[in-house]
Length: 147
Image (tube, rainbow, N blue to C red):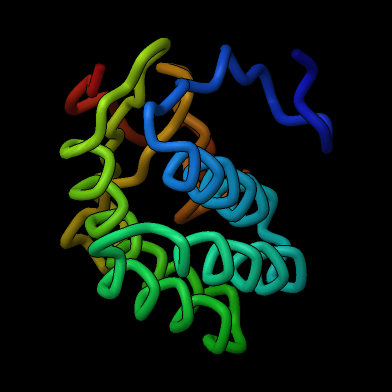
């Protein structure tokens, strides 16, 4: 299955038993990729799609709130700050889910959020940092693998 939008070296996306969560996760990855590309306009659009997808997922209120914050952020810096919180809530949803194929990688950059560090979810172990884009594309490491 080919990824749209020329995603950078994405391995197979994980498959979730819960189709609605699976669709929301795909939108989350599209948002992450927009932030990796430092494209605030694209990130805003993808965050809006994620909000719509999360509305069909149970217990996703916190994630919806965070995705809405990304959508309304207005600047790349503010989007990235809101994305950090969103990633925490998405990780909570993904950890409780049944993944029937593939894996989700929880990745971490210690320098994001003004040195506090921040996580994000990815389909691949290769680091593509959504908090710094091409300034520090490879900054970070895999902290956890969710299967």
